[in-house]
Length: 81
Image (tube, rainbow, N blue to C red):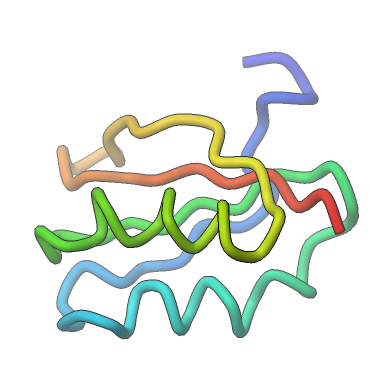
């Protein structure tokens, strides 16, 4: 993966219920630099909708959904503000 696509911080939210994955995303957004990627690994079925919706509401870039090494869903966000 090239440097612009490298995830700077991955949050392990595998075992937390809604709305905690998005709350953790908001809490840790400032832990990465502008332009860097932050990933949320979450098994919560609502995360597939909640993470992109949060990005739209907060002006961040929803980059992609993929999977963590263990196959858990992972949602990647670029900090733009």
